[in-house]
Each structure stands twice: as C-alpha cells, then as structure tokens.
Length: 147
Image (tube, rainbow, N blue to C red; front, side):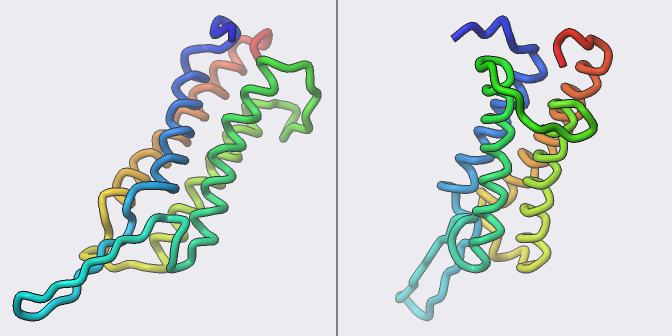
C-alpha cells in the first residue's frame, strides 16, 4: 500500500475513525455494579450492546464508512457519489453522523455514574474525528488536485 497517496490529515482521520470503531465494539460504555455486603455483581456493556445498541452500531458503520470511502478514493478507481461534489465533504458528513449517533447514545442514557471508560474515550474520539475530517476537507479545498 502506497501511503504517499494520503495526506497527513487523511491518515489522522482514518486512524481516529478506526480507533472509534474499536472503542464502539470493545470498550466498556456502561459499568453497573450491584451489591450488598460482601456480595457484588458487576456487568459492563459496549456501545453496540444494550441499551440502545442500534445507536452504537450505526455510529460504528459511519466510522467505518469514513475509512472505506477514503481507501476507495485513494487506492481504487471507483467513482463514488459525493456531497456537494467533494469526497472530503462526504467524509465530513459521515464523521458528523458517527458523532451524532454517539451523542444520541449519551442523551438517551444520561447517567454519569454508569458511564465507563469507553464512553468517555468515544466522546473524545468522535470530536477528534469531526475535527480531523474538517481539516482534511479544508486542505482538499486549498489543493484541488488531492480532492
């Protein structure tokens, strides 16, 4: 694979999208402990698990779509539909969709004492994904040969 076809911003965006996908699939979003005395039961759930796992699945699909769109544009000879005539704008929209579903999952289950590490990491990663996609779009506007 020839990484010289990618800009630094695109590589950062793809890396953040991939990390967000790992977070949504594997890191604990909810950590619930119930117990009395010496008896404690603890359970964790990922973003794609209950409750409202469909929001996590849709965020996961949008994050992976960012990576797939970038790979298809740079490594393949495929004409994909685009938003406003720009693949970079399309990736920014996909990043916004992923961040939106992460935000919805938060809004549907606001219990700060139940959120696990995966949730807090996803908030940072979703914001970083949108920012990196916006930076990549702005760079594509400045250098039309890369867009």
